[in-house]
Every structure is written in structure tokens, then in C-alpha cells.
Length: 79
Image (cartoon, rainbow, N blue to C red; front, side, top):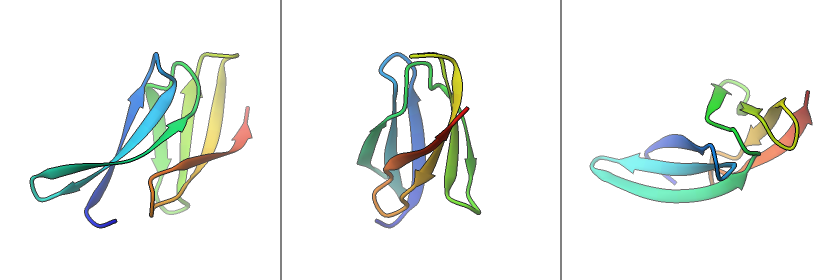
């Protein structure tokens, strides 16, 4: 997709939703399950990684690979 990619955390739902912003339009992308408490996350744009702090099922920092084409996140590590 084209436009600026935005990621929005849904703390209670445990998801991060992707959206694309094109001029004045906001288009939805993938919604990825990441874990409850995901309101805090950091993006490493150079490596297409997203680090997500979660509370459940146990507190962790979860590393996800970002697919820029769809906005989907795939878990690659948990600490």
C-alpha cells in the first residue's frame, strides 16, 4: 500500500492495528494479536521490528517483524 504507515495499540484487546494515511484518507490494514497491555511499543524502522510491552499472559517485551506491505506483525522473540 502507499502512504504513511501508522500503528495503533489496543491495550485491552491485545492487538496492534495498521492504518495507511494518504493525504486526507485513513485506510485500515492488518490487525495483529500481540498480547494484553500492548499500549507501549517502539519501532525499529531500519530493521522492520516492533518491540511491544505486554502484561498477559505474563509481563514481557515481545519482538515482532513488521510486514510493510500489509502492516501485519509476526512474533520473532519474547523476553
